[in-house]
Image 1: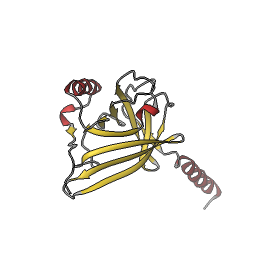
Image 2 (image 1 turned 180 degrees about the horizontal axis):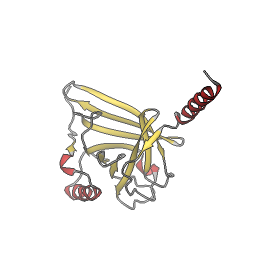
Image 3 (image 1 turned 120 degrees about the vertical axis):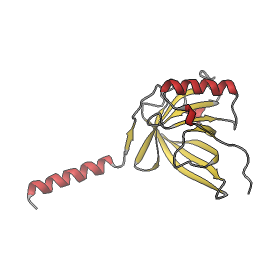
Image 4 (image 1 turned 180 degrees about the vertical axis):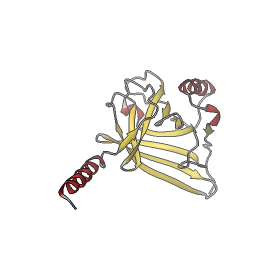
Length: 188
C-alpha cells in the first residue's frame, strides 16, 4: 500500500475513533423547549400517558420512565408490560444535556454510541416552585414522529390532555395516531 493511502486510512480511523465515544445526535425537527429547565424537578418516576407507535414499545402497557442524576448524566430506566408474553420488558439508557442544564434538550442513548434527541417541549406546571417537581411533560424526539406525554400519575385530566394535544398539533404531530397507554395493573 502506498504511503499516501496508508496515511489517509490512518487519519480516517483516528477520526472515527475520536467521534465514536461521543456518538451522534440527529435532530430533524428542532422544537422550542422548556427554558429555564430544572433537572431536579424532572427526576424520578413518570408514567407514559400517550405515545406514537414505535417498534421498541409496540404492544407495551403500564410503561414508565425513571430518571436519576449521575454526575453530569441522567440514567434512564424505561419499563413496560407485554400482555401477550405476560412479561416485563425494560431498557436502561443514559442522557446528557445538549444545550446546558437550563434547557430541556437532551440526547439519550439505549444503544451507545447512538443517541436520539429528547426535547421537552412543555411541562406542567409551567412555573413550579423550586421544590415542586414537574407533573406533566410533552416530549418530542428527533422529529414529530416521536412524541410522548408523561405524567407523575397514571392518569391526567381532560383539560390537561387537550392542552397538550393542542401543543402537539401546533408542532405538526399527527395526534390521531397517538396510543393512549393502559396503566392498569398487570395480571400474572
